[in-house]
Length: 404
Image (cartoon, rainbow, N blue to C red):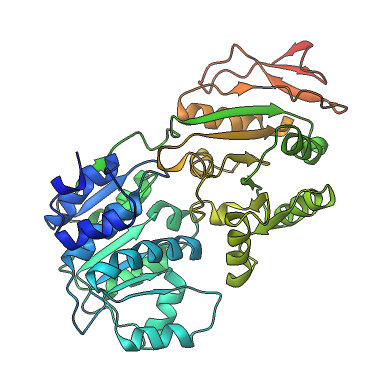
């Protein structure tokens, strides 16, 4: 199927061609016609499969370009995601002449105030800053015709749902609702069900499954040797254009520092960094000024960089869903990629949770040439992706006695 078969107007097809899209992805193919019909849509697909264009293209066909906006509102949890969505909308707007604006925290109010006062048709926003602007009587949502909640489950996880409720209460009751995410939990669906009208659910792949073109590897290692092993893998395997995920902001800064001390150019990105610092770090990886970007989960869904070859879980995430989102930063747009997890002894329960969630056992590897001077625990190679299986092998070299 081509975009010509989805019901998009010529100006939207011109935008699609200019953006380099040739054929719609499954989520675009299945969701766009329903959005164009005015249906409420719950869209669920893996990261890197084109969800942003799946709602931006049809909503910009449906909303008018006239005073009294915004007519479409997209709410998303992070600054990076907001900027990514704005980027796609601006590319489309070159052909549709819509006015697009983005508002998010961490920067001054005045440029955003001016953009809203000039008039906007499509507004992309993070919850906190949007509420601030509503309270300042700068943002008026009384004419919103389409409301998009992007990564709704992440907004729930990050504690934004009370803010999102206030935003929903401020938009007209008669509107079209679109929910798009890589995972859509039952908690989110229970909360938002009352706001939806006969929604159609579009799920093109099990949301817990990583993209098939991602090769997943696990490297068991002692806790205190993680940094050494990361440096070894980057140098020996020639890792480039790599994103490393840590559990905390402090560890992100520390890992980036260790990498630089070992001659590997890197930058850290997390919630304590200003927006200009975060954007500078992203640009540095995109332009090849650094080889490695070290990040926390707060930006796991907002990092959109082409040709990321490797994702490294320096720490396994707190939830299996975050694992899927993290590794989805590679193998985007149908390309292949490699996801590496450094497995400390205390993280075996987290690994089991991930394997149960994705329904497969991850292969364990030894790093050739690395001196495992600290004891590590290698998972039983005969384990299955079931929570009841807890047998491991304990050894400093990956061989040794059996433990239960």
